Amino acid sequence: MALDVFTLNEMKDIVESIKSEVNIYKIGLQLLTSEGPEAIRYLKSHGKTVFLDLKLHEISSSVSSAIKSAGRHGVDMITVHASGGQKMMESAVEAASEFPRMKVLALTVVTGLNDQDLIDIGFSRKSQDQVIRLAQIAQRSGCHGVVASPQETEALRALLGKDMIMVTPGIRPEGGDIQDQYRIGTPAHAINSGASYIIVGRPIVQADNPEKAAKEINRQIYLVVTDIYK
Image 1 (cartoon, helix red, strand yellow):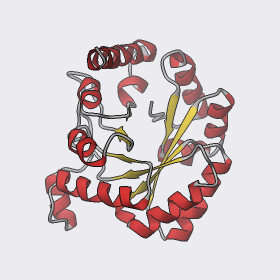
Image 2: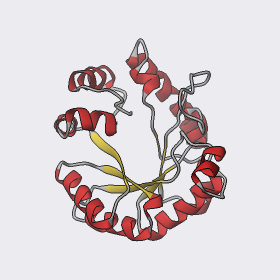
Image 3: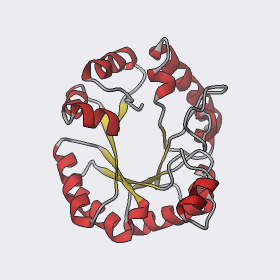
Image 4: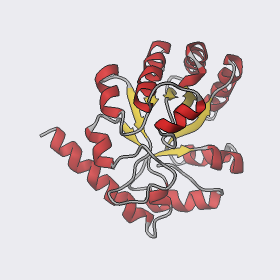
């Protein structure tokens, strides 16, 4: 669950309303720059798993220091940009090794970019090809998992194997507004394709009834998982 809000009070209201449905919460740049580590401390004090989505992309020493700071706050998962390169990701994994619970996840290509955007930036590959290339580098670097859209999940699962954590953003319920996302999928599609975790933010945060929205998404996941393990 992505806590796409500005204040601790908003965050607390959301967490309280869906506490029976969600145990893992993503803190992104919006909340962290607004409220700082207090958001992490609140979640950890309530026994929640914290996914800190910093998308780190810097020189290795800076990334290592940020990872260690996050680890001291009890962060369970943290993101780095795979495009930062193998040495940077290796440094991130080494820094995280001080914290046995912490997983380093490599972001491949954000879901707000499409093929034309990549061409404009200067990449010659289409989004899926670029995602696969970066994911392979992340795996060689020792990262525990990758972050990729639902459109690449199936190919990545086949390529990377069953042990690699696969986190899937860009999740929109059937018929939902795509907003600023391009490479999207439904909860059922993502789980069917091999996602370990899905990230859902605004469809819950902006819902009139967040608990009801979270329940419906969990229902869809349950149906898929039940069908897989029949």
